[in-house]
Every structure is written in structure tokens, then in C-alpha cells.
Image 1 (cartoon, rainbow, N blue to C red):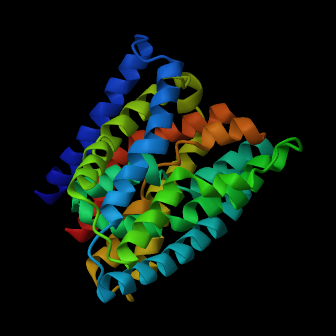
Image 2: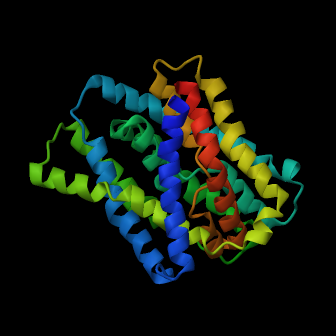
Length: 307
């Protein structure tokens, strides 16, 4: 029953992805609309969701839990980096434009577009406090090590340090300040953040569907390396995290959140960054498509670990 419940939640999200896919194919959603929805979500709805979820009544227990979650996150990203550095050996490729994309997909999961909506659907919105803290190292890793990986085949890409100050990161810090000083927002503002934040899940799924509609299917299915990357991203890494953390986890959520965040498909903006920094953008889109497709099955299966 637990598997069916989680599967139905993930399937619901995937059906919205299909709606976005069909909408793009029939040109109901065009490139400008998808770009606009992405900007709306990244700059407005997701920050609203994060501020609203992190802004809880202060307690020493929550603070201690947040610090532990941050330390766990740093360790997990370190593990993911180590696995990604071995990619040239098990993927058997010397093409630097492709290799950087593969490594990026192994190292970084789709926390913002998939992780937050899925974990919220499975465990409830209260876990987003910990998910937000867990996600703090994401931008640092993505826009430092991640860009270096994507830039292996290019000498023209320029690093922009302002990328560290994304709306998502800023909103997490705003939420943490409100939490630390136990500041309660006025009911109207809290209600506004709640309503706006709730649109993040359907918007993110529609955007993913629209992006995936641009992927060439024949080339995607014939690339065996994407299957290996998906296996590592969706199964091997989450199981490694589970095995390593389980003996030390004080409660189920300290284990479930790192495992399930790691179990998300490849970060959806890999193709955008690859296009800007010398990687293979088409390959990035293909990897996001397949890993997202497979995750409909793998996420509910891994969630059984916490039934």
C-alpha cells in the first residue's frame, strides 16, 4: 500500500510532465512561454515556497537538526563528486564536452524542480525546512565544480560569481533569519507566500515536460552511457548514501531526506549551463529525459526503505 501511495504521488507529477510535453508538441507552450514560466518559478514561486516552509517557530531541536542536515549534505555532495570523478573509467569516453555533462548529471540531482515537489508530496511540506538547508551547498557545487566540469571542452566560458546569489539561495537565508529570530509574518503576507509557493509544483512539472519535448528520441534511446549515468544517479548513489548514513541517523528523516534528494533525476538546468559553458547541451537534455522517466519507478521503490 505504501508503494502504491508513493507511486501515485510521483505518477501524478509525471502526468503533469506529460501535459507539458504535449503542450509543447502542439505549440500551446512555446519556447518563450517555457522561458517565462521558468523565470517565474525560479525567481518568484520557488523562493516563496522556501521562505514559507523554512519560516517555522524557532526551537533548539530544529536548529540542531538543521546543522546536522547541512553537515550530511556536504558529505553527500563530496561522495557524489568522488563518484563523478570516476566517470571517465566506467563511461569509457574521452570527449570532454560529453564527459563534463555526464559528470554534472552524476553529481547533481534535480532538487529544485523535482526534489522539493516530490518530497513535499511524500512526506508533507514541513520537511522542506530540512530540504532547504540540505540544498544550501547545491549552488556552490553547481556553479564552481559543476561549471569546471562543463567547461572542460571550452576556453571561452566565463564564470559569474553572482550565480551564487540566486533567488533560491537568498530565499533560504531570508527564511533562516525569520526562523532564527522567531519572526512571525503578518497573516496576509504568510497567506500570499503560501498561495504563490503552492504553484511551484505544477509549474515545475510543466516546464520539465516542455523542455523534454525538445529531445530527439532516437539518439536518446541509443546512447548506452546515459543508461549507466541514470543507474548511478537513481539507484547506486542513493543506496550508497543509505548504507553510509543509516548507522548514524538519529531519526528517519535525517536518513530519508538525503537518500531521496540523491535519488532525484539529473538536474534539469544541466543543458542550459552546458550550452553556456562549452558542454554538450543536447546530451544534457537527453540525460534529463531518461533519468526523469526512470525515476517514476525508482523513486517509489527507494521510498519503500522508509515505509
